[in-house]
Each structure stands twice: as structure tokens, then as C-alpha cells.
Image (cartoon, rainbow, N blue to C red):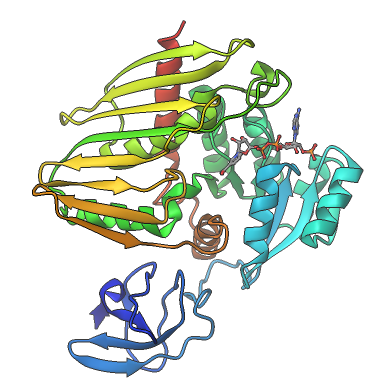
Length: 388
Ligand SMILES: NC(=O)c1ccc[n+]([C@@H]2O[C@H](COP(=O)([O-])OP(=O)(O)OC[C@H]3O[C@@H](n4cnc5c(N)ncnc54)[C@H](OP(=O)(O)O)[C@@H]3O)[C@@H](O)[C@H]2O)c1
């Protein structure tokens, strides 16, 4: 019997537990689904109440036949801010093991290894990617090195999760995708937003027609960084600028909701280094939908999103890149807010997706497919062409 667990799983206090997917159910003793949060004790369906016994509510998962072991071993390239967050997320999962850190400096590798309990540390990225202890590489270097470091890993035979933006431009994206496909290796852009429970729910609501036909998407993504010409935010040599750093979040969301735009229009104001300190972008889609977003690296904006349909709208609560709540508003103004907390710091969900793909022997994620990452890079190119 197929059950929709989203509707039926509750915890001991009666709260509905978000789950990743529906699954086949044949016994009332074990259930083969991957829970996102909470501890399930009972399940109700068709008026019946069952007891559940899960090995570990968070990581109980399908048995895969891909050759990947139960434990997936991660290596990280780069020791910066986001590398630390991913390290914490990997360490929070029982079926993931952070085994190697690669840095340009032995001191930074050592410090990172101590902080996140990593057994192998390397002061050259090349040395990490060739190690047999590493099953998958996470690229956490500045955007300008995404193509280089992804190719380095793929050429060494390692699947890759690469930070956003996927690359600097569509040409580089085409190169890394071709390399992954030629070598039959998994590759995914680390667009973590797509995997948090609130955005999973957003896709479900839209697909179920909860707000009718989607016509408008609007969002803003602004973070205030003090001006430093040497920082990756402002240095053109490190791929600085608001569009690539944070504009990619609302653009990726527009792509997820409305598809690839047919027309773009954009304005930007430069920082003293010439990169876009702020930009505003408008997109038009073949089916008549429109989207607009603003990105900034010089001020903190509300960081919210709004999806407007023919029969209502959905507010994506702040912060747009990792929301934990949505509000559905009917045409008459009735509002329903749902809280959808994520695991830990929110990054574990994309780690789980990568590991599920690897265990299933898939080369890309259905949720963040490679052709869509390429299309997003093409739109980012088209937007920047407007500024020249
Ligand atoms: N998903 C998210 O929420 C999120 C958040 C922030 C950033 N990001 C993305 O992650 C990437 C890294 O961002 P970050 O904030 O972590 O940057 P960061 O703090 O500056 O760290 C980048 C790391 O890359 C390595 N690196 C290699 N060559 C470098 C160079 N020439 N200059 C500077 N660093 C170099 C460095 O590690 P070693 O010196 O140890 O090799 C450095 O620590 C960016 O593409 C960004 O868009 C994503």
C-alpha cells in the first residue's frame, strides 16, 4: 500500500512530522523513509493507528545498491566560512564521515582538522582528491575556482558537490558538466535552499495548485558587508559582486518556480572595485509569468520572497536562502503559516540529497539538475551583459 507520510506521520505530541517522500509500506513494524526531523512514535492512516519502530528517525533510509558504503566519506577543499558550516552538517549525520580537509596552507588545514575532528589533512588540494579514503569532494573555494577545483576532483574520479554559484559563467558550467558526464560521476551545485523543508513544502504546494497558476515571483537578497577591496565580496579577481554571491538565490528560486526566463532586464550600481554592489533584475517567462529580485552586498534587506498565483500567494519567510516558515494567503486574505524547521544549521539536507544520489548510483540530482544549473548560469550571463 502506498501512503502519503506527509499527511499521516505525527510525533508523540500530535505534531505532524515533515518527511522526505512517500514510500511503499508493507509492515507496521518498520518503515523505509527518511525523516527530516522529530521522533515518530505512531502513524495514522485510514483511521488506524500503528506503532513505528525506526532505527534512527533522522537517518533511517533506503538500502542502496550502488557500491557506496553505508558510510559516505567526505573531503572538503577550502577552509573558509562555508566549509566550516558544511563540516558541522556532515558531522551531524550518522551515515556521513568527514575524513579529509584540503587547504593551501598546512596551518589552516591543521586548525580546521582540529576544530571539526578530521583525520586527514592536506596542504595541497591535489593531494586530497586522489586519496582512496575520500568518496565525494565538496568544493568550498571562491567562485573563480569552482571550475578548476571541480575538474581537479572529477579528473581524480571523485563525485563533487560544488558551492554556488556553480561556476563564473555558462562556458565554465558547460565544461564541468561535460567532464562529469564523460566520466559518469555525480555533480551538483550546492544550492542548499532547495533541500530545506520549507522549500520542499513550497514545491509541493505549487504542484498541488494551492495558489492556482503561478504568475509572479518577487524576492530580495541583501547582506551588508563592510567594504574591503581584498575580500571575495568586492574583489573582481575572486568573482566579487552581489549577483553571483546572493542574487543567485532568488534567481535559482525563480527558475525552480517559473523555469528559464525568455527575457531579462537589469540595472546595477558598482562598488569602488567595479563589481556590482547592488543590482535589480526583472525576468519574463514564456507562459506569461514574471519575476523580479534585488541583490545587495552593501545592505541587509528583508530577504523575503513572495510567490503570487491566480488563486492566492505564498510568502517565503526570511531568510530567503534558508527559510523555516511559509505563509499561504488566499484571495480573501485568509493566512495560514506553517513552521518547517530544518536539521541543525540547515546544510545537512543537501548533504543527505548527495548521499542518496550516490547510493542510488545517480549522476545528478532531480531537485538541482545540471541542465538547470547551466540555464541559471546562462541567465546570470545575460543579466551581466545588460550592464556592459
Ligand atoms: N551556501 C551558502 O550558504 C554559502 C555561504 C557562503 C559562501 N558560499 C559560497 O562558498 C564559496 C566560498 O565562500 P566562503 O564565504 O566560505 O569564502 P571564504 O571564507 O573566503 O573561504 C574560501 C576558502 O577558499 C580557499 N581559497 C582557495 N584559493 C583562494 C584564494 N585565492 N583566495 C581566498 N580563498 C581561497 C581558502 O581556503 P584555504 O586557504 O584553506 O585553501 C578559503 O578559506 C563561495 O563560492 C560562496 O559563494 C556559500
